[in-house]
Amino acid sequence: MRSTPVADPYPVAQGIEGSQEYKGVEVEGLYERFLPSAPADPAGFGRRRQFLLNGGSIEQLEAILIGSTEYFQNRAAARTTAS
Image 1 (cartoon, one colour):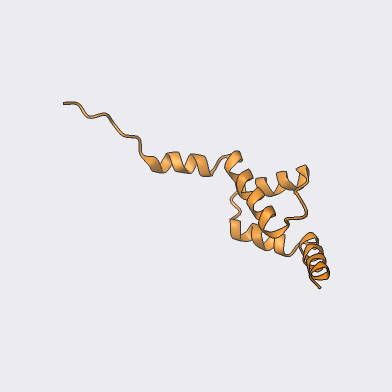
Image 2 (tube, rainbow, N blue to C red):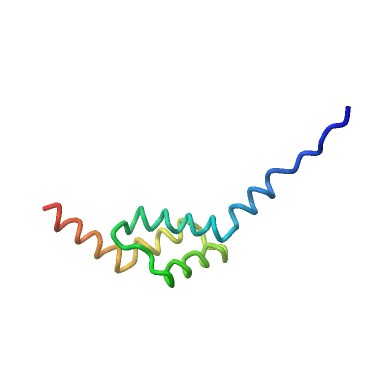
């Protein structure tokens, strides 16, 4: 009985996780988490996706978003409406 060769799943997973689509999903998720009332403009979305494609980490991108003016404006607005 011949066995069918099985593809190594690691390169397949790397290919998916390294794709533009996957990085875009990650950027969208971070925007929803940290900037829910400020959807990504196309240029900003593209820059942040490219940052990940160039080897930047999710943690680094989180820090960039948390340090952004939009994040502080969003947090201030949330505090004002919560009071």
